[in-house]
Length: 630
Image (cartoon, rainbow, N blue to C red; front, top):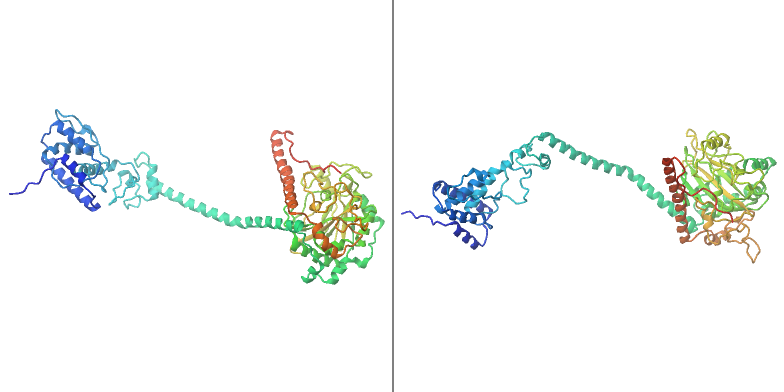
């Protein structure tokens, strides 16, 4: 006789599941789930006509819907359970409780299940219902990412009808572009062209990659400029510190050891034309008083000019800094403070006597400061009309005979080939009303950066003179004479590959009054910040040694009619002709605030506001006027 399988009710199944201590493997779960589903379906079909009391239906349905933990059993379904399973399966299969009419005398019960996941095994009834729900509801699923729940599955789930339209490559799953295209179809109708969308998304991804490549290319392209700017700023700061704080001094032995010049060439520079005076004429004096400048031809011999150019070029290479203010390629402020050769070069009778007679009304000449500017071919170093009073630490309301300058060029320059300086004759009497016939002119440029009116620019360009100079000539011009650089004709470039070197020595008279801050918007000259300096309001010749009654050896501004010994310059130069680190930092910050913020930035804001308002509404910029005299 056949042995009948033991029948278990659902309530007993729920009790048995608490005794489970472990879960079966994933493969075992699937096999048990399949077995339970087929058994449950067979039992339902065989006992479809059996009736179950409503109270039992209510109890069993509640038990089926409150399953919380997975349980795997191998059992047959009793007749009492049959009535419970079929409405559950039908309700979950159709997705609508109205599809199953209620039995007479029974209480209607709506049962809902979430999609089953094969990682877990439920009771036989729950497993069958859940599996059927998954198979039938898959086509109505609008989620473009089937695995959005993040649960690991043992087999790949079937794509919905809508999602399958976006499976362009037909591999049964959506790649990242296909998923993005599916996410755009919010209605789940597949109404957009999937091929077009995927193509656009791929092109968009390609464009993003190209943008990164372009950005990387731009970085590579601009990297040399960025590195150059950083290097320029670093070199500028390092050389400025070296000049103004370090007090480096090049001696005659340095030039000889480096093979720059010979000892004979140095001696020739210290005694020009073997001590002979320059033959000044009355015409030279008349031209200077009338025009504010005059050319002195053949002031140097050819050998002397070549030796001077060698020394000047070496000084540039050793201590010059990139010019951040003008278009000059290199600049060296206060050059003669750092070279005993050029310092002694300017201290000789041929130069001192000439300046005293020609430009200083027979007063003693004092060296104030010096600079070397190197100008490349085709570019004007300082194309704006300007005056050099701002680099003279002395009173503004003084005669033009209290300050003058010497300019020497390493190349031949004139009005045709360019490369030199342009002067405006008679402009030395436009600054103030001190001298006879002098009056403040409306076109006088108070600042290097102030723009002139169109009428003034036309006047200056029409009346300007570009004198012809060779390396053996010099030009002497007043500190009040308007002048500017003239660009070199590109068809006639400079002989030197680095450009033309222009050397300027600024000279004051013994009666000049020292004033530390020259202009309100322009940084004062570094020499005005040196230690052991003159006091405000003192004359240039007031620093006298009480023991000897002579000019003190540590004074900043040196008389040109007395040639200092090289030993004295080395001994006293580092301490007297330099500034402390604190002073240097304060001076640098003050220069930036004056020039870049109080003048330039404020002027830009002022111009924009007044242009929009079409009237003088804002007046905040620093005015390009001299500081009060002392």
